[in-house]
Amino acid sequence: MKNIQKIAIPISVGFLGLLVFNHYSLRIPKGAVPVTNFDAEKYLGKWYEIARFDYKFEKGMDNVTATYTQNSDGSIRVDNKGYNYIKKVWEESIGEAKFVKDKTEGRLKVSFFKPIWAGYNVIDIDENYQYALVAGNSLKYLWILSRTTEIPESIRQRFLEKARKIGYDTRELIWVKHT
Image (cartoon, rainbow, N blue to C red; front, side):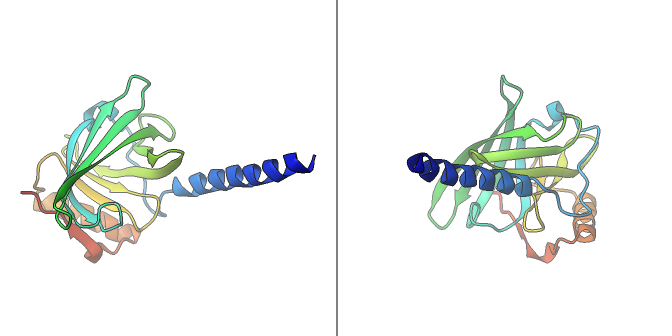
């Protein structure tokens, strides 16, 4: 009986910890609201990262893109690529995204290291699905995306204003180079 407890207790605590971690990693920043009437089909395809907060997985990267394709099970394949100008190599990460509620809300969870999931919240998008503002699970994660390597100044200002109102320090954004 003691051997079972030695195994069961750590496994139970670890599982509970993973559940709590995943719950908090799927939060959305206060004041951020996911897009409603979201059209997942229109969102699929290639996006260029225009700006982001620097974090360890993208540190030192330019020419960053994200390509979203539909998987047969309804989830979305996430293919992130970028050029690490420090190491002078192209890097790629393949992940999976799933909708948190339903496909008409721009609130997803994404994983590159299962079973760890993180929030991916489309909080603004233009009517033609050419430009998107994406919030992570906290004020540490923010992305501005475009279907091309440039973004109109009016969209840029719209996204920056929205981000500032939520509480993001937009002065910390890195504007990604595309060559």
